[in-house]
Amino acid sequence: MRSGRLVAFGLVLGAIVVGALWMLPSDSYLLLPDRAKPLAERVTVEGEQPSPPGGIYYVDVVVRQASLLEELVPALRPDGADIVPRHALVAPGSTFRDRREQNLRQMDRSQEVAAAVALRELGHDVRAEPEGALVVAVGSDVPAAGKLEPTEVIVAVDGEPVRTPDDLRRLIAEREPGEAVTLRVRAGDETREVEITTIESPEEAGRPIVGIQVEQSAEIELPLDVEIDLGGVGGPSAGLAFALDVVEEVRGDVDRGLRVAVTGELELDGDVVSVGGVKQKILGARRSGVDVFLVPAGENAEVARRHAGDLRVIPVESFRQALQRLTTLPKKS
Image (tube, rainbow, N blue to C red):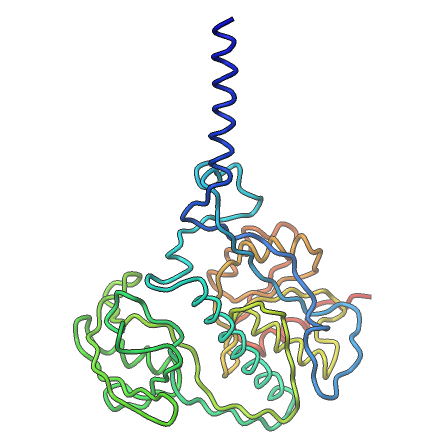
């Protein structure tokens, strides 16, 4: 009788512990697949045509805090989830609110760049002048901490002009880790110079860095009104999808009647840049029943193929290549 009570007590205690572990949050976060969503109703272009069958779809990743139980027992995590530490999502010294504001700024810029690239492809006269490397994030324990701020624009390194992020990376790469660089920085109508000592990149031996994340700063004037609204979704990874949908809205038949899921950051020159969360994005695309998945070439495409199942993966390096690859697909009747 007593042993039975002990067993019952143990079961109750175990249930309480499991319940507590399930309810208590951990310091880690889950990346989860989200369904692919059509862009046709989210993108409005002056002079657009009625939307045909098919369509361009964007894909996103859901981020939520993991429970202690999900952190300890991988089998209890939702299908397709990856667990990551907090610092992988939010830089030390930052908050999730800071991250969200940064993502919304990136989304705004990606929409503007995508519209410029698409309208230029359509033959419109688009004024898009690169103006430097826009600082979007600064680490808390790096040389740039306290010396550079998000929204500032780097326009020169040691007197050499910087018009693009590639210019900045190239000029800093000419130094050795531990050497100082002088950056000319613009904030509004004012410029200043700041000296920063480089350190070695933790991800690439021998490469000097100052510890910032940058994007293209540009003055863009569009000849047509283009409005894109994803309702609070942030980040730059839908840039390629936006540009393809703008062309679809104006010219039509970009998708060949297919449901085309797309991910990839787009630069002002039309280059497609790698993005994060590709595993979750292709799983979400598969669950949405799309026909093909466009993804940045290289490592992103390799990840996508590992989780694609029967879904066709099309790696691309540029916006123009994406258009060309879609034209080779058989038209869906």
